Amino acid sequence: MMSVGIVIPAFRPDVELLISYIEVLERELQPEEIRIELDDPQSEGVIRHLEETTATVATSSDRRGKGAAITAGFESLYTDILLFLDADGSTPVSSVGAVLQPVLDGDTDVSVGSRRHPKATVNSHQTTVRRFLGNGFSFLARRSLPTQLYDYQCGAKAMTAEAWDLIRDHLYEEDFAWDLEMLAIAGALNLSITEVPIRWEDRPGSTVDPVTTVLDFIRALIAVRHRAMAIQGHRIHAALPQSRSETLLNDD
Image (cartoon, rainbow, N blue to C red; front, side, top):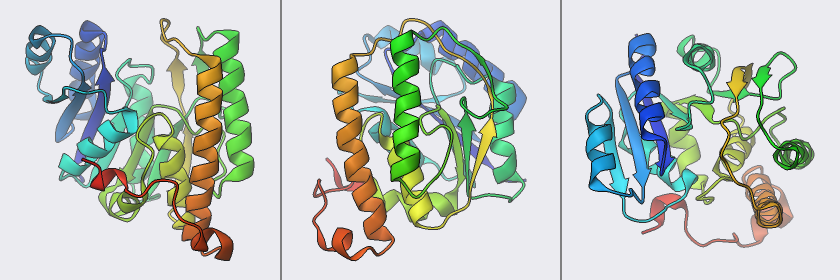
């Protein structure tokens, strides 16, 4: 039986919701380890409360960003399969199992939960702005990157440890664009990727600055496309320098 490790990046999460999510994950999936990567905890009480669960709690005094937190978590796991999930529990455990299954069966290197797949079931509380931005980002990514998917940003993705070993040295994006970059790199490395429709419920309360989000996404998409094409051996992209000098593994 292949072992599964789960990383949950968290920045000021709903603690009770996260604890409930962890309890169901433990009961239904029986992973080898669940690891919470907790950025900028508001109090020692939050840490102690989370430590009452079976999860390992790793803390950072700074807000590293989602991508940096996932990378740190994956680097700390020694399981056959690595999985990350958003802390808000938007992906129910039944769908988490569906995302894991193709990797457990040895059918794919990377498995991606998808809210935008035609067969997905979405109970959405998203604002019109967030929905528009999400659809627009996916449209642009499909036309720019070697990996063709309906959904790049859903917070449920699994991969083999071998796939992670190939991807890890090529990651630069420390925040929300990590998903985009990870999938683009996986595609550029010719790893197999399976997109799995999920049941998904958006959690209300998220805030989006449309201007900042759009500008950050455009910058990230250009940089990620450049790195992916360089890996594929495109002459011009291979000759140009990276937009950042160090990968996440080399950042202090």
